[in-house]
Image (spheres, rainbow, N blue to C red):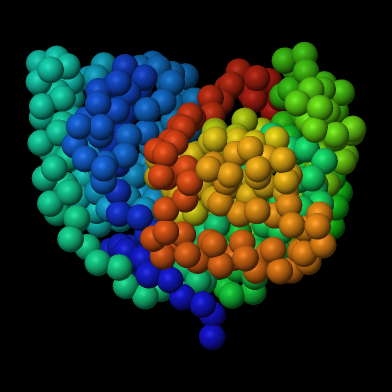
Length: 398
């Protein structure tokens, strides 16, 4: 029998591991109010402030809308309040309607219509409290591990990442996939140099071709901006950590996805399937934007491996930090959840992978991560560059 956890079953059948009221701004102009509303409403409220403007090119706006809707639809969200200034291209009512399609209570708030910031804050806190009244008494019920969508990320990689933390998390991914769940890793620029290995693991020709096309597009986009990814990686920080080539970095990075076949690859912030096995997502290498893409795709829990150390969290999904560096564990243990540096001391990858999988189930069951304890909740949306993509004309679209 697959292991179980207790979560919040939503009307659309998906299971949340948290029961947040999300306060979702439609632009940077509404982000300050959204943050204040969540802060003053209560510990159950989570804001997703971001940097996107009130007017965006169509393709960029579509991606912003997809992220905002995806965040609101994430099963960790029990109810949502969409906040706008009132002058944005992104329509708050349309975002709310798409979130409400999951059966969740959703409200909107216009700062202009309220009469400015002071009135909007008062109305926002009251509305958020009403939403909490509607969903706050939800109780956890038993769910199967196959209902978990597990996103994995890496940042601040060093020489220990590819031999300890990443393969340990990969082992946990293998266990989840065997139990019927979904594991997802991303950061397409970190496929470069190892893309042929991932392509050989593709479940079919379509997945293989899309994977290679996504890698080529990312590399071409970077080249158009004057960046040679193969020449610029590993980063100076990675080099200080002992990594010497992009191939070495990428081989270590893809280890965090485990060893199972690649069943699919989706675009940034597109829906991740439940019970889908190993599925990749096309995201940039910037950690915060990459994590947000997977959360918008439906990931309930994230694992974040780091050799040099990281404090990154997320407002909607708990982030489990895993390090394979004994010095980082010693210096930053209050930011870490799993010590994978024991691999270097002789503990088997299988044993550390089992510990990591148990941590995933425990966090899904309600145990707070270190990032949650400290309310580390970074949020940023990847900004698409439509003119560059149109010029490339690769035809690679999710």
